[in-house]
Length: 332
Image: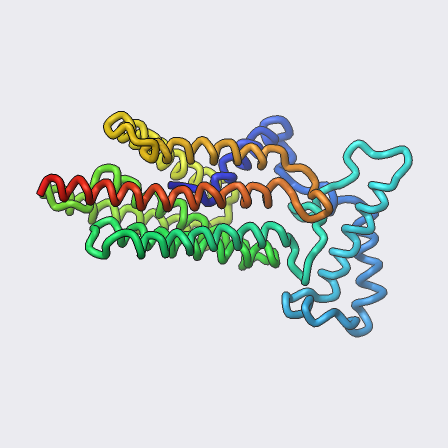
C-alpha cells in the first residue's frame, strides 16, 4: 500500500498546470525575489556577519544555523510582518521563500509540525511492525515482506524528519531517495501478495519472483543513478513516484473488491477504503495555504492525514494473513 508521498502526484499536476499557463515560470518562489527581502538579507549580513560571526544560540548551531542563514530567516519574518500589517491590506501578503512558507522555527527546526507528524508516521510504522511480529507466525511466507515494509517505512519517515528539521541539499536528496524506496517497495510486495508469487506452485512462480525482484532493484538503482549522476529532475522524480503509486493502488483496490465479493467480510474492503482516504488527504496539498500560526501548513496536515491509514493498513495485513492461515488449515 502506498501511503508515503502520494502528495507527489498533486504537486506534479500543479506544476504541470502552472507550466502550461506560464511557460517561462517554473514553480518558483516569489518571496526571495522581492527587492526588499534581498536588501534586508544583504544589510543583515553586512552588519552582522562580516566582522566575525555573532553569537548564535547553541541549539541553533547544533542544527547548522549560521549567521547568513539566520539573517535569511529573520528577514523572511520581517518582510512578512510588514506585508501583513500593510494598510490597505495586500491580496497575498504571505509569500514563500526558497520554496517554503515562512515558518516559525522551534528549537531550530524549520518545519516543526511536519517533523512532529513525520514522527507520528514513524511510530505508526513501528507499532505496525510490532503488530506483525507478534500476531503473524514466523513461518508465514509473506511475513518477511511485511517486516521489510515496516523497516522501509520507518526509514523513509526518519529522513522526512531530518529534511523538515533542516532543508539542505543532502537532506533533501536523502528524503527523496528514501521516499522513492518506500513507494517502489510498495509496488514490489503488492504483486507478491496479490498473485502469491511467494508460493512454489505452479513452478513458474519462484522464477517470476526472482525476475520481479531483479527488475525492482534495477529500477531503483537506475532511478537514483539518474538523479545523482545525470540530472536532479523534480518533475521526473514526481512522475516516477506517481506512476508506481497509481499502479500499486489500482492493484490493491482490485484485490480488495475481489476479496470482499468472495468473503463478504468488512476488513476485506479496507484497502479500497484506505486508498479513498489517501485521495481525500491529498486534497490538502492542493490547498497549499500559508501556515496557521506560522507553523501548520497543508503539507504538515498531509503528513498527519497519513497516520491513521498507516495504522489501518497494518491491521489489514494482520487480518489478511490470519485469514490466509485459517484457509490453509481448513485445506489441510
